[in-house]
Image 1: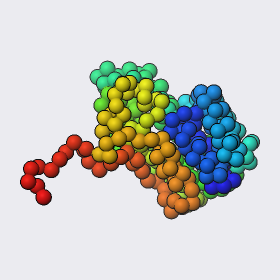
Image 2: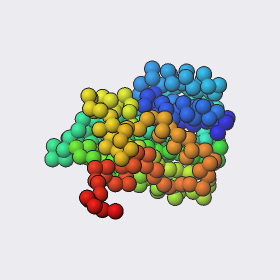
Image 3: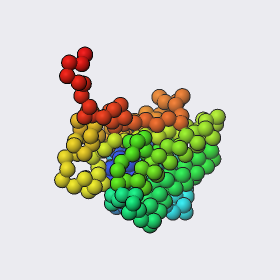
Length: 258
């Protein structure tokens, strides 16, 4: 990955920050997009300390013009785009479907789903224009593989991200642009900390491995998917969830079962 250039949306904190730093440690240049410009600048400075180029751009992925400006900055800074990690998007207050609020659903869908779709649109155009080949990683969730109660808008958007990822993977496979999706379980980030409050992350995660994930563990999977080590991999979803999708953690064998 040395000398390549990648965009990371939502790169100013949490999983996005971990992905940006892992990419920088792998020797690639990074452009950090985030609604929080202070956070994006902090991560860009840390990335430059790894000996790579880095830039920070304020970007709201629910606004296509801001996505286009972010990708344009990557081409202006490094003359190429080799891929991206798309993980921008908020978690809004929990709400049952029976109480669904139109504005809340619209806000979340605009950021998670349409933000991912239009990020891919401009990333693919830039890859075609510069490097010709590349890899894009989208962030879904374990909620994009099953569901989470009182998070219908988030669950719907994360399922849809998996679908559009597979669609784009088919559209771009022949030209060497790979597109995959990661489905994290509960990961200890500032956003998750705000969401779960005083609840022990290990309990909130509900994972068979009896702990929550770390942002770096998601970033490791992202770097593999971005790198040539996964050169024959496209259109897949990769759960990084401590075993949640293998089955419920609470089920135990019946007494006397072998």
